[in-house]
Structures are given as C-alpha cells and as structure tokens.
Length: 278
Image (cartoon, rainbow, N blue to C red; front, top):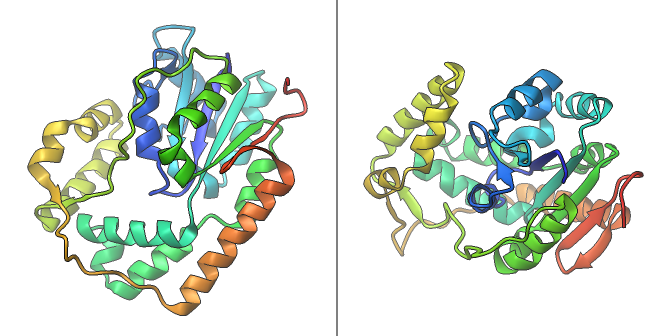
C-alpha cells in the first residue's frame, strides 16, 4: 500500500466530492481535516500518521492550495528521503469552467474577494489558476502522478476509483456515490456565511481542526444555512482577456500532462515514478 496520498488542484475541481468518497473507504484516512497539509514537513506527516489508529490505513491530504505552495516541493522531497511512498492526484478542470464556478461560489458565500467587487472577484479567480509552470513543478517530483479531468471524475467515477485503488494497492471502492457536492446551493444569509468563513479561519489558527471538519461535514449546517440556487440566477461573465488567459493555461497544462503521462482512458493519465511498478 502507498504510504501517502496527496490530492492537489484548484478549488471547484472536485476535491470535496473526492474527499467524501475517500472518507467512506476503510483503507483511507484523514486524521483531522481535509487540507491537513501533511506534505509540508516530515514532522507534520508523522504527526498525521500518529493520529491514524490503524497502521494499515493510507494517510490522505486533499490540499487545494498545494499546487502553488512553495513548501510543496521541499516537503514532498523530504518525505521521499524518509522512505515515504507517495501518489499525487492532480484534479484538472477546464480553467474557464472552474473560474466561473469559483466566482459563483465565492459570491454566494460572501467571500472577501466577492465583497470587494466584481472586478476584484474576477482577478482573484484568474490569479488562482493552475499554471503550466506549477504543474511542471509537480511532475518534477519522482512520484506517481495520476491526473484526472473533472468530467471524468464525476461522470466515470468508478473508472477513476478503480485506477486509484490499483495505484494505491488498496481494496476496491464499493457503493460509489454519483452526486457531486457544492454545485447547487447558496448561503441563505450571505453576511452570516462571511462570519462563518472568518470563524473557520479562527478555528484553524487555534488548531481546532477536528471541530472545524465536523462542522463542515454536518448535514444540519447544509440544511439550515444553505438553499438551492434560484433558477434565474445572474449569469457571470469574464472579460475576453481573462478568457484567453484561462483557455491558454488550460491548453498548455493538458499539453504538459499528455507529454509526460500515459493515457489510461479519456480524461485519465498516469505518470509513473522511476521506481514505479507496472
């Protein structure tokens, strides 16, 4: 079994969907919270391993911001030097679709980038894009890399999970859910959602990550504080210059993936490490 599974990719690329699936599998473990950032140091990794009750569980970290974190490369290489075997999963969604989804999400939740105005919101989602240079840094690590397109992740979930289980040497996934999360709701009271986001930041800084994740996973919170999006909601648009930047970056990222990886099926590519098996 692989020791450590790290999932990277910008927010709104399917990370919550995948997180709920992995949490339900007996071989995968998240000791405290999604986005635990165990990759940042050997000490953080060992602390995470120590909180997993069974030694036969694979430690997982779904970290949306890892793709642009300067600590990713030194942290991952330090783990490799300690003999930790890793698999990195890259979630790759159309940059334009992801940007529009992120704008709706941030606006409906009252995130700071949305409260500062439409222009600032657009600039923030464009700035947060996955660039070819960032992706090339990830591929510079001598680890197995599994890249999955968002459409494949949500439309052929079973195929993706079968490949994931094979690479991780874990038991297969049963009763796979087919419904993505965070795609059709908005905050009932935007100001309350903003306060909730600030509270989440405070809980994380205080180290109360277990409590924070319990709140985020609560179905009651979803029912009380969120509602379905209205059918006639405002359609967001991006400037032509932003569209070109996003489309160019997405095309270049996929060119890099296809050049460095082997195609397993539509939207699913694997790059094996130098020590990888068949």
